[in-house]
Image (cartoon, rainbow, N blue to C red):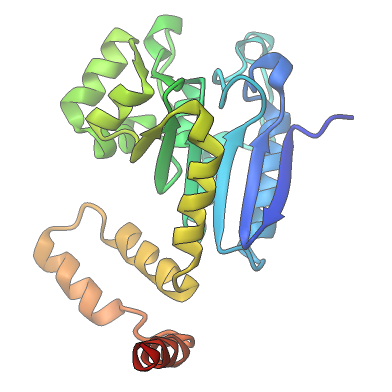
Length: 248
């Protein structure tokens, strides 16, 4: 049986690949069960970053409409949204690498990433209104935080498709690269991230999550009193920098 999500670990990075290319990686319950298993394993493992991407022609065309029509039965209420939340809350950087289609449910999944890297071929869109559906996987909260509330309204009301370059311009994507440079851009980004302290990445991400939406004075107080402080690799990193500076 074909695995619906593949995992490949390289250079401290866990690569998760949606693997239903014949269905444009449409998201069904099998995909979410596989994602949940991988995310749980990553949370307790040695990976220093995660890349989520799609096999074949695209990231994902979205929630499998065939499953919706057939009356899918999740393992528990709000199952898919809980899995996406688990991915978003991993204590390490999560990168959504998007090429080709990224519509509706797939956009909700991609928004779980701390960073969205888009190929020029990427096509982002929210089509809930096209199908008389409403978001339940986080889009109404994460999308406006990325692009602003009025751009999010435009996307949700018009069901338009936006290119990778447009996604960059509106702040949905952090970067957009040519398709031929997509794989090398993913590797360069992950190398840049994993060169730095995993302790700091986890602590910084926790601070950002815990203070999201707080007034600035409350956020500043939270940072002062709840900062994780110095990491176990601080002395080693400073010593290595000092040795390098002296040798020049």
